[in-house]
Length: 100
Image (cartoon, rainbow, N blue to C red):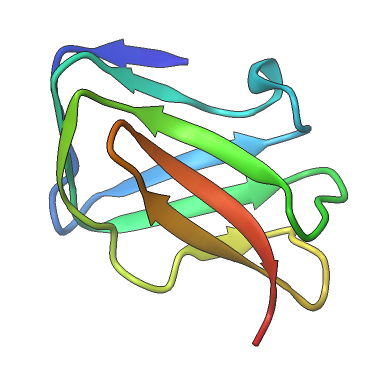
């Protein structure tokens, strides 16, 4: 887990997170007490069998600006599954969904 007052991801950067299970202790998380500025790439590496409907709150913040570049770079997610980023009021949540 990474904790900061502010977080800025520029257009050339990549935030890489590992997800090894459903528990908060089993995936990378960023906690920002102020503003999270999103840009660039988000890369997510799975090392367990995630399923449709699994949710991961990977970044929490007081406020946010921008979004990561689409599509999210995903490694190790099962066939027929994809990730959908939800930029909520105080968190970035990744939802495992069925591929369109």
